[in-house]
Structures are given as C-alpha cells and as structure tokens.
Length: 247
Image (cartoon, rainbow, N blue to C red):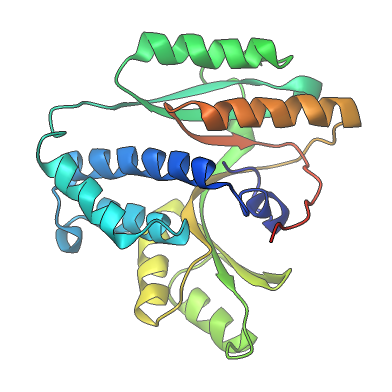
C-alpha cells in the first residue's frame, strides 16, 4: 500500500509475512493480467507490462511467478475481465483516502470498500471528493550503497527526465511526472540499478497528523484494505510515524 512518497511509508511494507507477500503477488498478478490484455504478453512491445514487471521485481516476486502470470493472462485467464475502479473518501481525523481496485464484480467491491470505510470510522464519498488533493507522480526508490555516487545518480535521474531527486534514510528517492516514469525507470534499469520501489503514486499536497487512537483505527483500515483481494493500492495523506524495520 502507498501513502505519501516518504521512505517512512514505504518501510511499512517491509518485513511482511509470507502470507502477506503472497497477497501482494496475487494483486500484482492481476495488474499483469490487465497489462497483457491491453497490450499483449511481450514486454518488449508492451510498456505497461514492462512497468508492472519492474514493480513485481521490486516486490521480490520470483521470475517464475511473473512468467506464469503472463502465460496465464495470455491463455486460460484471458477471458477474465478486470475493471479498474477508484473509490474516494475520508478516514478518521479527516484523512483523505483513494482506493484503487481491479475487480470482476464491481457490486461486491463497492460494498466491501464502503464497509471498510464505515467499520474504521471513515466514510466513502463521491468521485473527486479528495483526488484534487493528490498529484499523480512516478516514484522510484533505490538503495544507496558504498558503490553508488550521489552526484552521478542525480545526473542520471535528471538527464533521463526526473523532476526531483532526494537522498534520505539510506535511499535515493526519484520523482517523475507520470508521463516520464517509464523512460526514467528504463534508463536506470538499463544501467543496472535495482529498485526497492518503482511505481506510479498519488502524492498528497499536504498531510494530516492523527492522535494515537486515530492512528490505530487508520492502521486497521489500511490492514483491511490490504486483506481485500480486489484492492490494488491505497493512497492517503495521513502522516504515519516511522516503524522499526523487521529482521
């Protein structure tokens, strides 16, 4: 799941259990299926599929799983139609929330999403009620190592079309326009860099601080969305505290 584009929110996804990792792979498998249906199963001619494969690799999805998902989408699962639907609303404390889904049953998904909002002290709103608070950006995160040079990395990123470059918490965080994301990602990939994160995010214009009780309720909401197979991404503007990384 994605919050605003700070390493603290990215770290929340680290140290997942095998079961949680399996859910992530299932969700990415759906994205692969949609990309294959739109542009075919050959990554060399399908830029959307290349982007999803890069996202899969950043999530440590085994290559066998990736290839299997492509083959399934090209073959027996090719008749399953996933519809992309976004829902907007508010969490506790007035936190703005966007839920992106891929579903084969929009009535089921709408009901599930509304239930999670209601269950966790929030409310689902109409399309557009919070999306104006976010800007769509490409976010690429690369681990900083002894072998990487900050200035060289910045020049590569900016020259390839990135909008912004930051070094923080032992990582390089590169921000791009949505239209430039694939180009920047592919340039860095061709130069041999591996990604901790490489995907399109919705970045909020401001963040909201929550009280301790509200943080617990909001964390529960994120976990419930995580557990829902139809939910692909959740974007929000809550200012989440940093969590300790798990071994």
